[in-house]
Image (tube, rainbow, N blue to C red; front, side, top):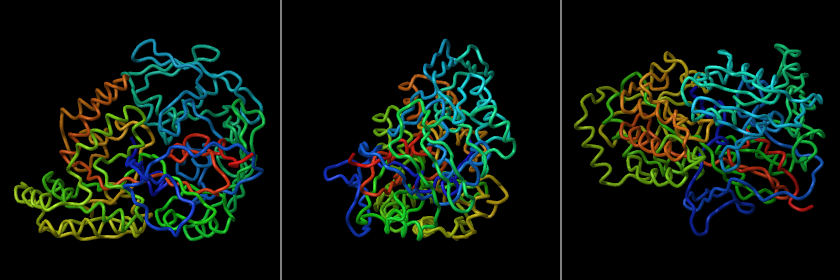
Length: 548
């Protein structure tokens, strides 16, 4: 799995799901003064109420202009937010984060290493041509090319072939529990073979068609100004209630102003500042839904946090509740794992129960936690002799976390030093060992694209490029490999719970918090999902007026 920073790809909009659901739960806000959210009363709702009325046009805001509309070469939340309405996938991520067939009519598994996909009839691309098995095979092979964004999803694939007029068969080297979940993401995008080849290197750039089959077609992209989608009359599914969606982009202050004045009708907020300041605005309703991203501390190869006892001690005294309040306007929930509950696309009860059993990451540290942490530092075999360097950029939330880490280290009798880099340089540290060589720990917010926790825990395999701290456990490796090959959800969930426990005991990463996806919408509109599913499924197809 390629490590994906939420700042680069999904921001707060790709952030985590909260699970607190209690009396007086807060499912959305349409009146107030932008007060901080009380996460203990936040009940995540994956959907908004169904729309019943048609709308001629809706203005939607993005955090920035898409760099490309070819997700094979350039990912990012802006492009996905647009293209999820235009380009369909073989499977579809549902608002509750479960996965169902979409352009696949039927799934067959004749044996544990074979997947047979029978394709849906009656699907046409936006140029009017019919989707064929050849188009699907072309798309899968394109995604699998080594230079493409989704190539790592095909590492276990032995062969992909057309085995019938409407049939594709995939054979695996080993059974693969996550492949159909990957096909609900960008690895499952289906393109018109002829259109992609005709566009060549210009595919995904302004002036080119979309080569897709979704409920909307790309009708215009004015670079530097807007992207326009128009409902596709030949769509095989239910016709959208909204005829046209116009996307523009703005920084936080401009986004807030446009939504408050009615110049824009909605946005999936990318930053906590924008989301918090819009809460309670008259004429707007805010919804909170599940996602997979997290806030976490990533120990690096430099070695200041090489000793697991030091990492455990830091986790025990970190003030997660204070971070949530000061850095994220309450739009964060202290969390004990490094993957959000939006990853619970199955076995939700089992994962929720297991989460509650983890006590190494308290929301507010107690005196007992501090005493235990000091004892861990005392017994550590390789306690740091110099300052622990905390890497961050200048974004508010990360700076709050960095300062909280420094304060926690001080409580332990250790010294912390914060080093701040520009965001562009900081992003390089995720993929470049040299770029993070001066840091002992990075402050990170990031996400996974699959609704399955095992899609995260392979980061701690002994040979994983994302296992920076050098954690090694043959037992852990064996359990992860077994889970990745276990198709049965119940059996896989039991394995993942054990894996999660071992990961937490070793404090490979130090979890901080999860935050919800935040949808801000004109109060006269409704329908789209409130969850992270908007990045991978046609959310605008459900958008419309509350009343017909």
